[in-house]
Length: 100
Image 1 (tube, rainbow, N blue to C red):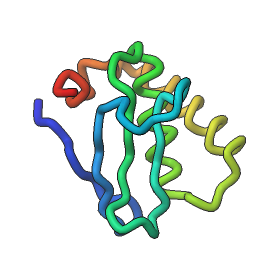
Image 2 (cartoon, helix red, strand yellow; image 1 turned 30 degrees about the vertical axis):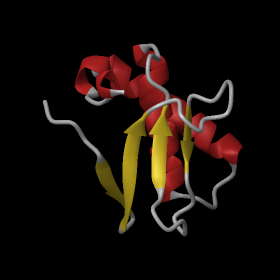
Image 3 (cartoon, rainbow, N blue to C red; image 1 turned 180 degrees about the vertical axis):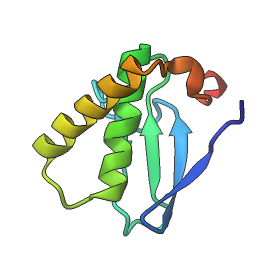
Image 4 (cartoon, rainbow, N blue to C red; image 1 turned 90 degrees about the horizontal axis):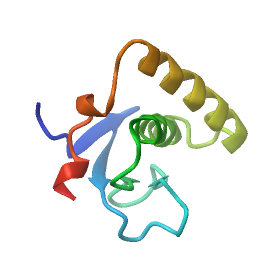
């Protein structure tokens, strides 16, 4: 499986990093606004498979829909992550945080 270091969301390329560096205490992830010079999505390494999948979906949704309220992102990310888990996706499908 290949490590993903960048991904485009709605035409804007984001860096993808699995690191706790720069993340506020208690945050699982963070997404820069699309207007940032080098927008980045940061995911904390060491999360459970459910937390990791939820966080990736959550931050990807921010990258796609920066202007949507946090409560809507949270609800949709939870629904999508639960569906993916039910379909059999797991942390073995997510390459990257073992490089952190």
